[in-house]
Length: 322
Ligand code: EQ3
Image (cartoon, rainbow, N blue to C red; front, side, top):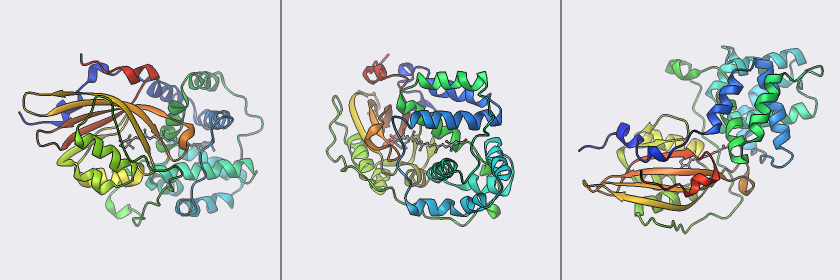
C-alpha cells in the first residue's frame, strides 16, 4: 500500500496528549491588543529573571534595521501605534515588512525593541497601565508551564504578529535575503546514541541536523517526503523542507534519548523517539522536551517526520505502542 502523508500523520497518535501551549495561546488570543503587548512584556521580563535570550548577531539585526530606525525616529504615540498594528496584524507598510521577515528575524526585531524600551528610546508599556484580570490569568497560566513551553508561547505569539503576507502575489515579495547563520556556542553533538533505535536514517538525520548539514539531512528524505513542525501542517518536498530548515533549524542541539521501532508488513518502519532540543536563542539553559515520529519507507528513506512538543517531562518515557 502506498504511503500517504495523511496516514503518516496518525502514527503513534494515541501517545499524544493535549499540550498546554495552544491552550495558553488561545487565552492570549482573547486579550485585547494593549493587554497582549503588556502580557508579553510582563511574561518576558518575568522570564528574564532566570533565562535571557542571546543577543542576535549584527547580520540578523541588519535585516530588521530599516524598520527599527523608522520606529526610533517616531513619537512615543506613533511607536505605540506601530506595536498595536503589529499585534493586530493590520495592513500597514511596517506590518507588511514584518510579515515578510523570517521567524528568527521577527524574534530579533522584538528583542531589539525590548532593549530600546528598556533604554527609554521606544515607548514602554504606558505608565498608567493597569494589568487587567485577563492578563493576570494568562500570566498565571504561563507560570505553570516549564521554561521550554514558555519560550514556545512567546515565540509563537511573535511569529503570528504582522500582516499575513501568505496571500499576497509574488509581485509584492521583497528581494530574497540570505538567512544569517547562528553561531554555535557549544560543541556540536556528533555521536548519537538512542536507546532502542539503530535505524540509520534516524541516527543520520540527528547527526546532520546537529551539524547544520541540511543537505545531508534532506538527502535522507524521499522526494515527496514531509516534515511536520510542532503545531503546524506538514511541509512537503525536499526543496520546501530545505528552505524551512535553513530558516528555522540552525544551531539546534538535538539530544534524543530513547525510542521504539515497529516494522510493518510492507517493510516500512514507524519510530517514535523522545528527547530534548535546545535553541540557539537560549543555549543550554532551556531544554525543550519533544518527540520525533518517523515513518521510514522500505528503502530506508524518511517519508515523514513529525516533531511534537511534549506536554510534560513524563511524556519522555511515554513510548506506548497502543
Ligand atoms: C518587547 C516585548 C517584551 C514586549 C512587547 O510588548 C511585545 C513583545 C513581543 C516583546 C518581545 C518579546 C521577545 C523578544 C520574545 C523572544 C522570544 C524568543 C527568542 C523565543 C525563542 C524560542 C525558540 C523556540 C521555542 C525554538 C524551538 C525549536 C524547536 C522545537 C525545533 C524543532 C525542530 C526539530 C527538533 C527538528 O527535528 C526539525 C526542525 C524543527 C525546527 C521543527
